[in-house]
Structure formats: C-alpha cells, structure tokens
Length: 122
Image 1 (spheres, rainbow, N blue to C red):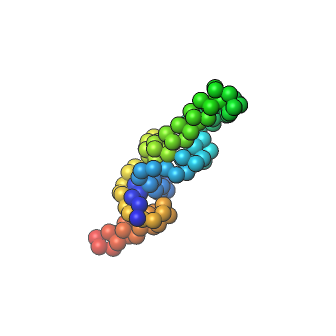
Image 2: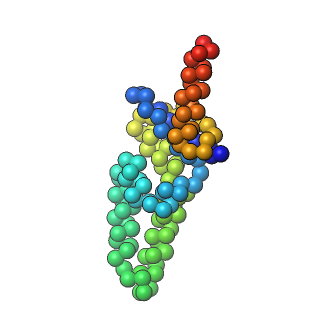
Image 3: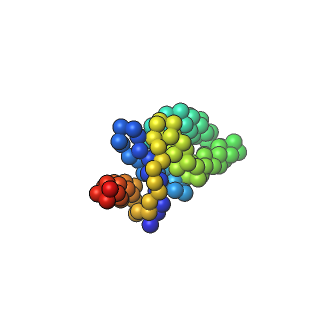
C-alpha cells in the first residue's frame, strides 16, 4: 500500500498525490509535468531536455549533456510529487486527508467512502 494525500478543489474535484518517488516524473519528466498542468515547469524541462539532446553523445560535451539529462529526470522523480502538491495548492486545492491505497483512484474512492460514513454517523 502507498500513502496518498487527498486534495480537493472548492468545486468538489479531488486529486490524489502519492507520497515519495514519482515514477511518471522520472520516466516522462517534461511531458508528465505538462499533463499535470504544470505549464511553466513542464516547458522549462522540455526546453532543457531538447537543448541537451542537440549535442552528439560521442563528444565530451554530449556525454555531459546526457548526464545532465539523466539528472533532470532523477530530480523529477525525487521532487515530482512535492511539486504537484504545491501546484494543486496554488490552484486552490486544500489538503484534506492522507490515506493508504494501491492506486490514486482507490485512494479517492476510500476518501469519499470515509466522508460518506462520517455524514451518516452525524
């Protein structure tokens, strides 16, 4: 089971953010950031990766560029979920709970079920 922080927008939409390492951030870096609507970060990462990919790998500068690209993807893996939490907060989402689940959809379902149970008990 993984830990997920549940965020909710005032409109009622919920988002679950896994705690720890972000595999999508690591494997897809800039594309992942753009899909998650982190436009500035995604654009910056995309430009950096494209510029670094211009250099031929066989050259010394190309080897360094490849290493820097790898570092970018590792940084995305380490920080991706933290960045996503900050981004959701900046868009008006509130952190409501932390739940254990095997996936984000299950975490949201578990949160909704817990909220319904609270409403029935009142």
